[in-house]
Image 1 (spheres, helix red, strand yellow):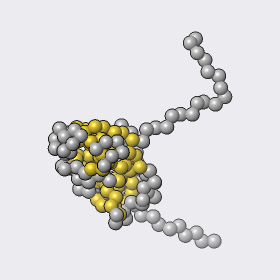
Image 2: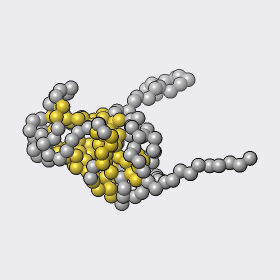
Image 3: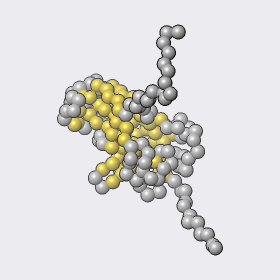
Length: 171
């Protein structure tokens, strides 16, 4: 026996990481967030200088647009989203891409959902609210692919035809 721990309570688990950072050069590159299965592909010329690109998980989203739910089927806005930023150095000047960036998100399609298959899309949070970005939802591969030209806060929403009817109880 090398060592033995005796205690009545297990140790506190370490918190899961909430961000991933990669150095992206003018030659291009990629960042893969294993946290939420989000993949960024930066083509050559996306940036004119070497940048630090950061993907940060974001919880407590604002509510989704009408007739849409979050990727996990919630209409409360309490699902996950993410923030994407590019800076010249950690904590430095924020930059935008000179070329569009391909973002691919893998999602779990094995769980029952009220989302209409093929209706998932990436949305960017703007001053006026959520803006839908064009993209391709592939339910067979459980992937969503979108081109992004502006870094900001993002979330995945899907359309639903789920109807909530009030319950009337007679006495």
